[in-house]
Amino acid sequence: MNAADVFGIATRSAGCPAAALRVAAARCPATPECFAGLTVISGAASAAPLSCDQPHYWETFAIAILPPDVRTFYQPTVAADPTVRMVCSGRVMLASRHGLARRVQAPDWDIEVLPPTEAAFDSGSHVYRCIANEIGHEPSTSQFGR
Image 1 (tube, rainbow, N blue to C red):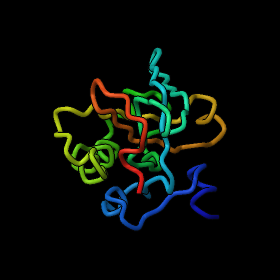
Image 2 (spheres, rainbow, N blue to C red):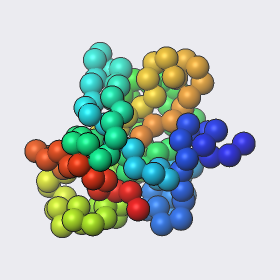
Image 3 (cartoon, rainbow, N blue to C red):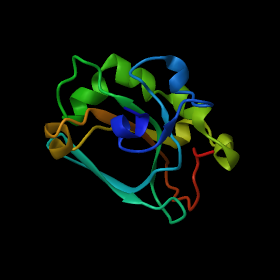
Image 4 (cartoon, helix red, strand yellow):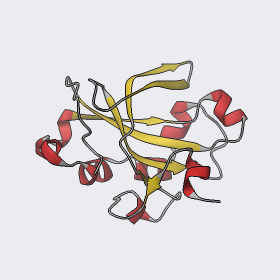
């Protein structure tokens, strides 16, 4: 089974700050992955995919497998897990930036956890994403892709 089969997208570990943690099979998307917005309703999270060359709010900087003791899609529970917090940390996000995004300081970023949707979780997907947004900015390029 290859990484795309596990994560649903092509991923990379080379040059990926999340992979350097060596936890949760964390990796980075092989190509930029962006979203128009993030919606969390009663703990169920979803995000609308959008091309990174269009104005977008969120971009994936890490992708990983839910820890074995996290058996839910419920966003607050997933986000509170210590391993998830480590993968989706400000340190990993800051190390993942490239280009002009490297000039944006830590307080100017918002980091969220995007767990699998309820339907994806019920179908066996245990993949979550660490996504970030430069507060008040809609870039039209990738801030984390290489």
